[in-house]
Image 1 (cartoon, rainbow, N blue to C red):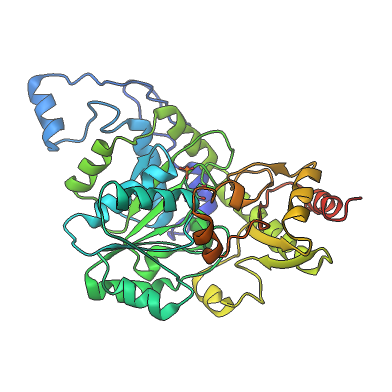
Image 2: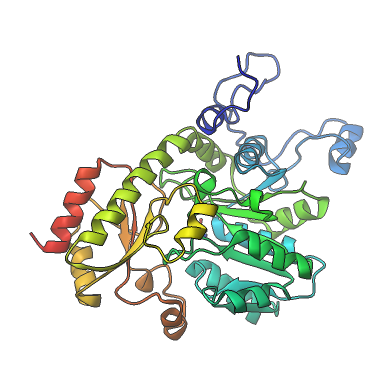
Length: 395
Ligand code: PLP
């Protein structure tokens, strides 16, 4: 037997499995510890757990055995030293930003076209909590680097959702180090299958596990992964922000992870082909896809990503009315928000995920009213193409 690290599909298939339970054989699938509280034992036992002298559980908001297995599995998948599991992707962004800003005076720097929910969260942090937040156009590399070099923490998405713009991770990390700032990446769209941010020196990774990691469109969750070991303060922030996940949802993500690598292979294959096919369709004006060989940042893509993934956006020649007609004609592809499930989904970000952005900011970010976002699923490719074609041509 080879001593090399098992491949990603092997690690996913076995994540969190075969853990010993007292007095019995280990079940292959982990048990769901559906309990709020844990028997603390003697006063001395309780003291050992609360003081951190001995690992153990007290209350499921502080920690839970099933949730802990998921944290270990995701930390391992991303190559981080530890992970915290949250009740949503937005809760993960809040937790990471709070942890990364601890002890810093500089602003939180983000690009202006972050996911709509993150944009609204940053607005709340800025206007309600009075945390200095600066949003910058990341396509102006000079402005981005200058803002990062004065940051307290940096939050970025690459590729961005929905316009698939890339940000140079290595260059961002170098600039952030000048300011002593931590860099947080939302790796939801790229996934650890297609992009390895810790290799570029990024400090924190967040995910909406709702998307590709779970992959079944049946729960809401998130995670924060740290390259360095988690500190007691990090854990304190996580438990007191309160956005912890329940054991059953954590178990669902562990179940979803079993097929993660397989699903990503299929997503990548279908995403690449659908993007190329749309690019040649007479009704389509423009396609935004990270793995497009004609993408303006194709060189950066080659350096930073392994595959283009399965999220793309496109504009129709007929503008917003044609976009609405297209959505209304879809039969197989579901008109729904979200991404990363096995089923193909289409939506107009301006009326859904990015609705909370003021229209002028949306326009500046390039999210037009006619833009359609497609999360390409793992269905039979010919079926996806046939549905898109009939919706585009009206046949
Ligand atoms: N980050 C990205 C890139 C997303 O697309 C989303 C949701 O669509 C989120 C974060 C928020 O995730 P959740 O809906 O699980 O809170």
